[in-house]
Amino acid sequence: MNIQENISLLPYNTFGIDKKARFFVQASTEEDIKTAVLKAKSMRLPVFILGGGSNILLTQDLEALVVKIEIVGISKVSETEEAVFVEVGAGENWHNFVLYCIQKQWAGVENLSLIPGTVGASPMQNIGAYGVEIKEVFQQLKAIHRETLEEKYFDWEACQFGYRESVFKNKVKDQYIITKVVFKLKKTPVFRTEYGAIKETLNTMGVKTLSIKNISDAVIQIRQSKLPDPREIGNAGSFFKNPTISEGEFENLQKEYPDVPHFPQYPGIKIPAAWLIEKSGWKGKTFGKIGVHKNQPLVLVNYGGGEGSEIAKLSKQIQQSVKEKFNISLHPEVNII
Ligand code: EPU
Image (cartoon, rainbow, N blue to C red; front, side, top):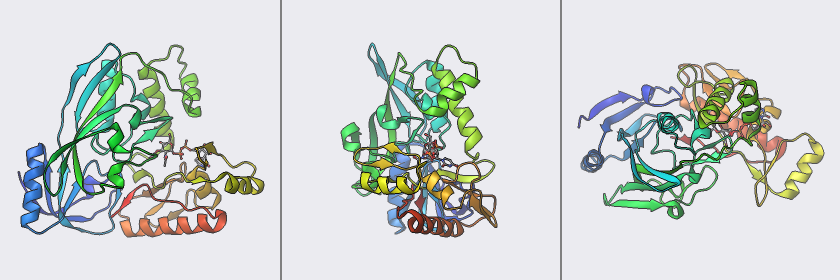
């Protein structure tokens, strides 16, 4: 294991922020992780776990041992008549895993194509897109406790999944390092095309017979047309979560804005944060090297050389103006560090 000192994290975060790690190490086995944790302890430094770096905003250098999880491997562990159980290393790239499933004809993750990040980070915030969330295919995960180094398995219940939420962002926040995830995939697909844009895109693609490959291709097309590619423009996907308001609050909002888009989300109504941000006048606004994306205002962007602190400041200003205009609070989905 090669511990490096004063390493720029620029290649390791999709926002493209140039902040440094005091120490940096790549861990390709569970043993590597344990060794790194012990090493950090002896150096009296905190451990900072890094996956694909696609959901963080760095506002400062990290006085820590940054451990980049590189555990790879995809293997079928068991199967039934209907399902296959597949164990995946936490360091595998999420989209590569999706493509692997499509090639094997294992269904369930095709709607989640092209989401940046790693497999290990996916249960953390119950990633979701186009009508599907990871909790629908999740079976269990393996994790290492950061203090005791004990290995523990979390089943579906234990993960306490919610909208972009899990126990790992709440009750056991910063306590475990996820090393492996087992997914339950279907041998016979159940196509999920109810999310508006998918149907339209399949139509324009001229698709007659549905397949998981077609759906994946449609999702890729939609994402590429709406969302900036982090390799070209730094970003971390949706910066905020979509807020849920009460029915009473919604009725008042609808009186003033009859066209407000909304989705029932028991017990309340979900309002797209993108709409609130657009109506507050931020869509496509640029401030020096950073800004609000022109096609999807829920995405904050770094055009190159921007500072994390500037993006954090912009996010506060957006929260404040949405609060003033609509009396609705936006909460970041991205971890601001
Ligand atoms: N909208 C606007 N203006 C815009 C864009 C969108 O008003 O410029 C409104 C429209 O009413 C649209 C609605 O926002 O119908 C929803 O937009 P979209 O379908 O793009 O989805 P979203 O709610 O903004 C969520 C996820 C995305 C995911 C998409 C597709 C969250 C925080 N974000 O965005 O996830 O890809 O749905 O399923 O839930 C991510 O988490 O990083 C992410 C990209």
